[in-house]
Each structure stands twice: as structure tokens, then as C-alpha cells.
Length: 273
Image (cartoon, rainbow, N blue to C red):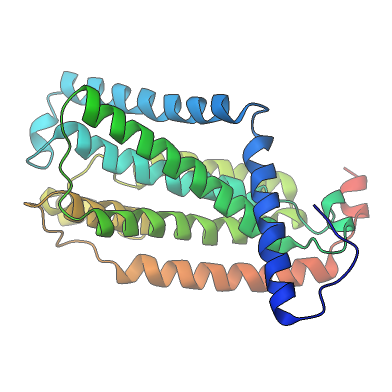
């Protein structure tokens, strides 16, 4: 995995970096569970259980009529898939190996590679789980029709990207106050169960309620994603520019914060805890 000799050309350095990212990503995927298949099945089960819970809850409350006209299960899936993609990216990046990790003692390894590997591993797991669930539902229950699959996939990637940016900020801040930022990470991820507005139809939501959700980039990606999935839904209270800007700004701040932390952090910080 780690080679002592350095590549002499720029192309060799790029290839070596991509190879290292690939191996680090594989390590991250297998780190969650020794058996990769079991790890994927657990991830799928987690999503399916949430779909079943929300389907049952919304049916008992009689709120199914508030959804978008079309396949109700697909409506639930759009919110839950994007939600999981976002929070899993935050959790993976926020817990990535930092500057004081033993992995950083190997010369080719650095924190940027650790962040990229964690983010890609999270995206791989979520993409695979979503593909399996959609295929099984389409083949076993009823056919699924997606109006614009490319646009829907773009919104899923944007949900992942915004999660990566927020996770980078939390990762860079965690060494300064590990307990506080660890709790903050969990609180933010749990709060998105409601703050993402994944069970709301933004076009039908009153303005005084909508203002509590429009700050969240995940709210915009979910609503815009439903516009790509459903032919008869056209989002009016969300946009793509806001989550794009949030992703760019968060990644930029995260990179600067990580650089500052890496220059000042010491192993002794965690030794006294």
C-alpha cells in the first residue's frame, strides 16, 4: 500500500496519489465491517427500515395526501436517500484520520488523502445501497419511472458534496475541543431528521414554516431532486445555486481550517485526556 520510493515524474505522482486514495477508500469501506457484503446489507437495511417507518407513520397520520402526485414510496425514497447520503458523508469525513493519527506516520499518506478516501467510501456505500433498493423495488413490487435520472443523480452528489464540506469543518475543529465538536456533529446529524424537510413538499409549505428550513442545503437538494424525479413537480421555493455555494464555501473553509489545525496540533493534546 505504501511505497518508500518516490515517483520521478508528475504523471507518476498523480497515479501514485490515485492509487493511494483507492487503497485508502477500500480500507475505509472494510473498516466498518469485516465482511463487505454484510456491511452493505446493514446499510440497505437501515434505509429500508426508515422507509417502512415513515410510510407507516405518514399512513397512520393520514398525511399521504400531502405528498407529490405520483409514486408515494418513491417520494419517501428521495428524501431518505438524500438524507442518508448527506449525514453519512458528514460522519465519514468528520471521523477521518487526522494529523496525529498513526496512519500519518507513513510518508505518502496525508490528511487530504484521508478526507478524500473517507468521502469516496461513503459515496460508494450509499450509491450501491440506493441502486440495490431501487432495483429490488422496481423488479419485485412495481416499476419505477424517474423523469430525469441524471438530474436526480446530480442532486444526490450535491447532497454528498455539502456533507463533505460540513464534515471537513467539523474534522478540522474537533482536535481543539473533541468532546464538544463530537457532540455537535451528532446533534447536527440527528437534527437533519427534521431540519432537512424531507417529508415536506416545499411548494405546499407556508412561508412562515419554510423559513426554518431554507438555510439547510440538504432541504434544497431534496426539493430540487424531487423536481427531477417527478415530471409534474416544479420546485419554486428552492434552488440549486444555494447548495452549490454552500458546498464550495464549506470545502474552502474546511481546507483552510484543516491546514491551520495541522500546523498547530500536537499529540500531547490527546494524551492529557
